[in-house]
Image (tube, rainbow over all chains, first blue to last red; front, side):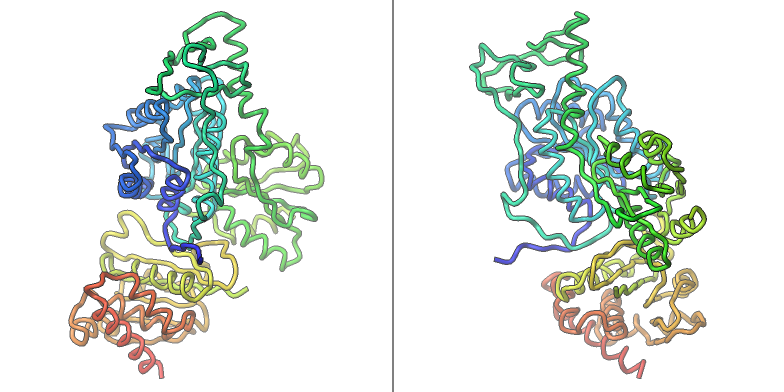
Length: 377
Length: 181
């Protein structure tokens, strides 16, 4: 049978990806340029028996996500810039309480209200450090409508597998452009659900590390009772200030992602093997970069593209390896050097890292990247 | 690799974003090519000049926006003035002859006919001017077959208006051919 295809917007694809992954709860507060995610969820979720709630604000939406997820639901919210800032307190809560949830953040100009309709990539550090304290961070940055669908499915699996919030962050261009999407059949993309407890309620502890770094999570209402708090906690979920426990728990929470980087990281290398100049770009900017790399190759410039699909954790070991035979890096981005700093931070000074920065609501054009390559060659 | 860039422009509310979507859909769903559509967004899309851009290619499309425009539709003078500077040499410009009185000059083919009036008087509804224009763009650009373009139109409009849109598409297609002959 022919697969179902549709010509849809990035935001619509994210919503359909969530439904494919089994999402059955959405809470959000509409904000440009992410509104279509909520719009499609409000239409699709009732059809599959799920629940859609428009909350009073963004932090309330995040709180609703935590509650619904603890009740066993697979949960999604969508927002943009200022909304991401407002969610941060409860994102931290989800990190420490280890509650799976998926957050779509469509990147627009900032800070604050900034440029609501302009594309941006300036939330990338906020995805990692927006909420205070040491915590794990997973952030996915797709570059096409199909990839946005597929990465949203993966975001759910990662959130469930590692009991942690996962952010999926298309820039406004990827979120609003339309492309053909081929919908995978059920089962074609792996969907991972959280591990349920194997012990009876009286023996259950929500942070029982005898089951490994990611303890099984019971659903409230299924007979399992446990304590959930934003304070540092013991294995039974009750607060503690005991130094050894707090240290070990904090380290474990971060280790859930750090020790499983190989499973979480995903990137694409294009013409890297003999490249002298490597462009590091993600999202829609990587599409400008690919165009520029092809144009450069036609002019005899040995250029290549390194495209993170998972931005956090960043594929730093691989980039370090590449940097040993690279003459120069260029980071075109719709932010003032956020990606540039990350690249510099992992290549141990092996090559200069030049930036091209746009925060004017315009994409970085292929010509700008090509001209920069000629300049640094 | 072939890369063909189109821009549909006019006033916000004229349905040009829809026209662009239908073109991209015709190419990527019915013609078996690849296509990306994007559009002006925000305040500029709600009045004043508005645009919808479509890239069509036989292979993967990287940069999703227009670099050098192969084909431009301008329904208004403002759109013609604002969006014609990157029209390619040898490209094609389609304008509404009653609204674009000072068409941009350049080394490209210019085709004009009364698009709004055709919709209003020959099809019977001004609202389908975008489909008249779409039919004309299909004829002038040759990126998708007439048959596939029509399928894309018919799968994109409400059932009650199939005949109306079919007529609009056919008239646009034929008038563009006649005007460019």
